[in-house]
Length: 171
Length: 171
Image 1 (cartoon, rainbow over the protein chains, first blue to last red):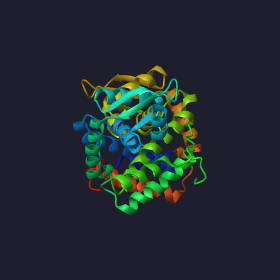
Image 2: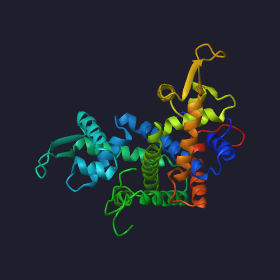
Image 3: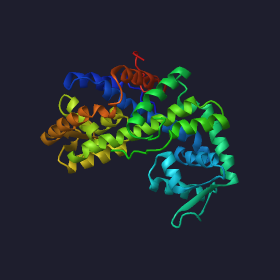
Image 4: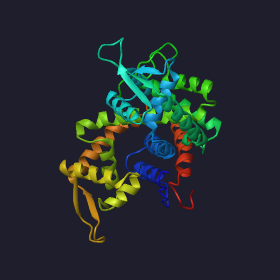
């Protein structure tokens, strides 16, 4: 669990008040700071329930993506692009997953310098257990009802689209 | 700027669809994944406009907090608790700020083992420039209007309160 701050006041509210006195409107600052804090809270919650499975959330995401692929195998560069993370982070996650026996790695016959990662039987088992743990945890968002979850997704989607995450016609 | 993914589909929507087929309701997963992605986008946007000032967002936050204090000085442990970050991260940020000439460090006379960080004149100047840059950037949330910013803050606040960020009577 993330360490409860247990402050006698809301640190973001307080920063917002001071900001308004000093600099002007604080709505964007308060919202952005909240995104940072909640990301921290969620990560701590996820890692806590995944730790007994010897997984971090980042590595769990890689395994889920592999189970979603038809063959259970994906090129490392596809994993990076789907999970929106840096190639170095993907390589690091794959190294740890290989060491844990959850993933196998082999050269990609379709790409001379490329590498394929494939999920193992043990990997499929641990994904199921991780998914159960995260689902029971409501993905760290148990404080929110269905409408709030939709609202959160919709508002954040505008930022994601603005950053160019999607170039397709559906955007 | 964060590298635009430019995918022909929304990767979180797609993951949500597959999730629903395989595991069930995906609203919490989609919202949580969106928080992670937007945090990444905001961090990239902030660091981009702060880089010319030789600041990261984490170090900018430390400087802002110091300008908010009456004397321009704060104990390192107070900085960590207000910014909701680990003591090691605070020490690291202070080291870099001292090296850049934005902060001075001295033993805390009121706490035998404690350390005080104080903002310098150059630190106050760079905070002003950083604040101008971030304000012009709408804190990375230019895609959102005032009502959406409020909604985002309010929804995320429920998660922060649920995590025990505030223990006071106002909670």
